[in-house]
Length: 284
Image 1 (tube, rainbow, N blue to C red):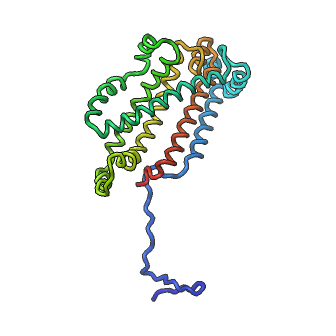
Image 2: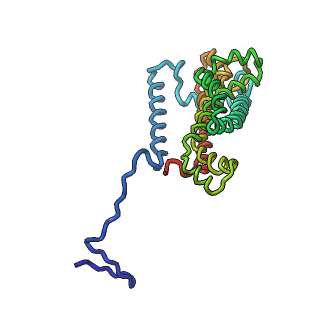
Image 3: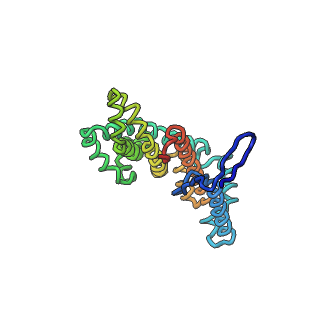
């Protein structure tokens, strides 16, 4: 005999034989926010840094306290460093990384898509990319200086080369991961080649492309600092190098913090773009 519950004129059976919904257990990190965990981790790291520096476990010359670094940020902001203001150093680095990223994205995505779609393009571009991609950028930095001089052109070219390969290869991987059933379905509906490219290939490859851009930006920031160590009088890397020569460790920490903040901002922008353009990623 089943129980009957009457609520506002609606009779609902709540019998013992009624199936209960089963909630499947998730797998992996899931979509839950990790903000509190990240903030707690940052607090622990800063506290550990403060304790180690305050107790003198590491000489203050090599490890300043967080307070000293914060004080130095204000001093560099007011007075500048190494013959330039903080804004000039940051703007010089942002100009180089921004220009190089725009060029690498504009060239890397079309070439990567073409490599994934055409075997002739893959055969032509794959060899030079695979040849120079494993090389550290510092290995061909002297060549850039010899060929292009010590101005901005050599630095931007070096950054473009460092960022081009991951973007191009990620675009190619995105095309190769495209299910052929999706292409055949579009063809059966009369899609033309350019419609396939715009409506099927590019959206399907977009998650891989955005991941490649994030990787390229990380590589670009590391390469930028190395490029600014040589033949430069502006930039965050130059400021760090100049401070290290005078053992101004607090200024070195300031430069590292600025680079980390800029790189985090770039990565967050790509994540936001990813959430907007490919909200289905990881949910299939």
